Length: 149
Length: 220
Image (cartoon, rainbow over all chains, first blue to last red; front, side):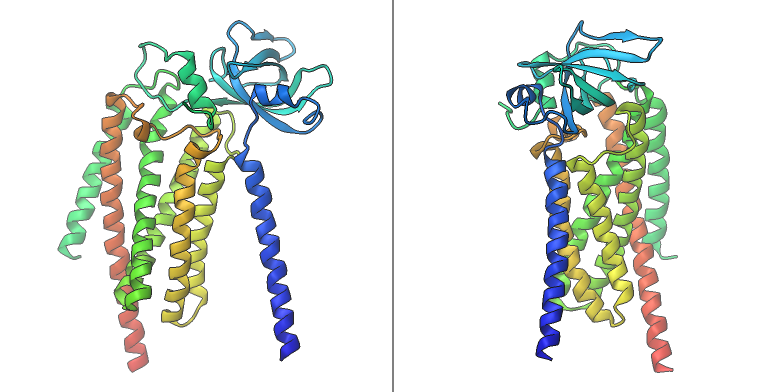
């Protein structure tokens, strides 16, 4: 019986460790859901070639679009750094200048982020049409957490 | 049908109709998202009602572990079942809302992952009850899951405040939703809470009948 109990104990430990690792690995990815442009700039070499998410506001006046190739070029900012991004495909309707966006892809060798997916990040404000837009500081604050004032 | 059940059923029906009319017709569209934002009137009341359901599961699970009487366990079981339904509605409406606004049906950010885990934990709670033969044992095991699941609920709710997510923070909590859109939301929330109470009475009645049949079979 002793040996059998030990077997059960070891089996149980393996399963618990396995589940624990899956949860840990999963939350590591989920908790740092995206990097900010400042973080990317600070550690550019480290994340080169790795598949990551980058989130920020689309810089006003930076968005260019070539309709015949479906390619887009724009910059993302968190108020500090700006990272240029290129993308080929169809972005969501809410993707526009001055709005929040999270892109998936990797940092190119030329310092331009190669995105293959654009997600529009809207904020928690709901109001009827017409009315003033909140100031950009408000948008940065609602977009990037952790450094709220 | 008993009087409480009829009253709750009719009340829920009337409130759901009123809430849908307010949300789909009377409320203005959102300035940024347009008409698609109206999914909020289903999405938000569903999850808040699920939170209520799982809070009832927590209280009743503790009650059952302390007192050991069938009533607590029956109420926890019924509430968990209804909560799972409302969580499923939240996940579905969230995906339908996510595609046109975010551009994706699903993504593994902390809020969405937490909600998926919430759904699975309480689904596991129901499965656990069905595989353990002895009712009292099933009740005790399930009560532990019912208490642990509550922590995931808190995590899921706070995820949008604690971590970077694609999902935006709670508009109700931050007071960033215009009155014209907030009032219909409250009416829908009330409708869903009454609907929850109605489902709960039906489920409890079913459980009582189930146990009566079982007792008769054992006795006869």
